[in-house]
Image 1: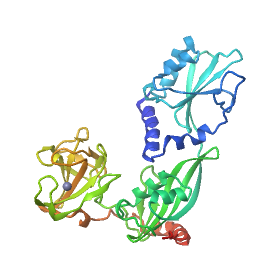
Image 2 (image 1 turned 90 degrees about the horizontal axis):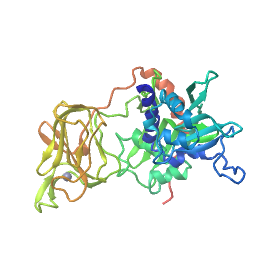
Image 3 (image 1 turned 30 degrees about the vertical axis):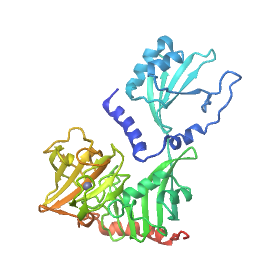
Length: 412
Ligand SMILES: [Zn+2]
């Protein structure tokens, strides 16, 4: 096996995870195969070609499964052939496999199916040796439009429109620099999207690219358009209809799933010290262990335990700008003073070290030695598309589509 094949397999898993697709959804197309009773012996589902589908259990290794399926003295050769493409240690509980058998019930071939799209089949060649082949199923991609009005939450509205939670994540990520979806959403807001949906064998599999999106309401109207002139994987960016990048050089909220528990306030009564003490940052209440991102790219000045602020990270970003992160339960692996970090790189995890009444992130911004309100930091946008004219021409039809979709207002 090579490092690159193991990596690509892990990549597939991570891609599924970053899209926040629940396993039940991932398996939807997969498990839809009819549960066929085979005589009276078994209720295992039947695969297309009549082979029995199996599943790796929590304690299963590849050799355990091969032994159980009757490969006996062939198990070593089958396992070695598969290991040329996949690291058997990366096989996880819940992943599927199937065994093809001859008329006597002896195993003839083994197929490992880590995802509904990715299959590895191990078969015997005429000379008796075993060979593994990787197969990737073709996904059908449909571009669809969806829209809705917000009553209580964006999640509920998207569900009502018949779409999944993964679409909410795509929208939250797209607008993360402009909208704080935990504080800026209000009843009466609306959203519209043009998004790719990927289908496998006619069943919804997952979302592809979010091509265009609009969010409007009290907070203003924001639009974003996907643009990737080179077509290179991972190089797509979002811009508004004027060609301004949506990404800013600083993230307003350096973690996900939060609520603001205390704002920037120069005259706050301190909950532990019981004195009026300026609160020179924003507190984000979040579960212990929630990953914290670097708000901008920069250099770590400090990553150490401090008396009041607990595990503390300070990052310098140039132009006299610093961000500070307090009360972390721990630092990211290998994080130390002097390290260069990227925007949105995980630097630590929410905790309650130092003076804290509960797990939260205290986040503050220092400009030229002065604490400033993170909500009021004016930050630069990333550069626009290299060919603005081509971008504007390309998004014109998508902009027209967004504008034509109704801005549904939720009933009060
Ligand atoms: Zn605080």
